[in-house]
Image (cartoon, rainbow, N blue to C red):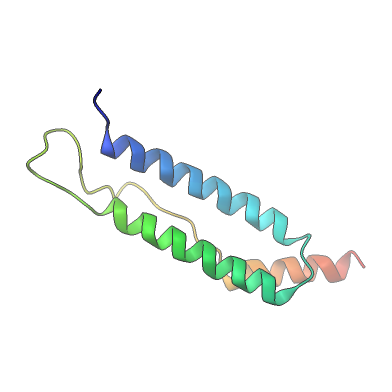
Length: 93
């Protein structure tokens, strides 16, 4: 069985970006600012690890293990995402 390391990284990047969008929505439901910050930091640490893996390349492997950092981008949760959700909470109370 042949496995495409580039394909795995592309799928993983797409999955982590989808998780980022879901977390942004879920943050609207969380009232605990400390928990929001912990989620942001934990998610961003994971995203950073995936971003690092996307940079790996091996010129000895033909048509695989290419540097994908120029074509793949991993989203991060920014502090403004937390503030936006805090404003949404205040508006809904």
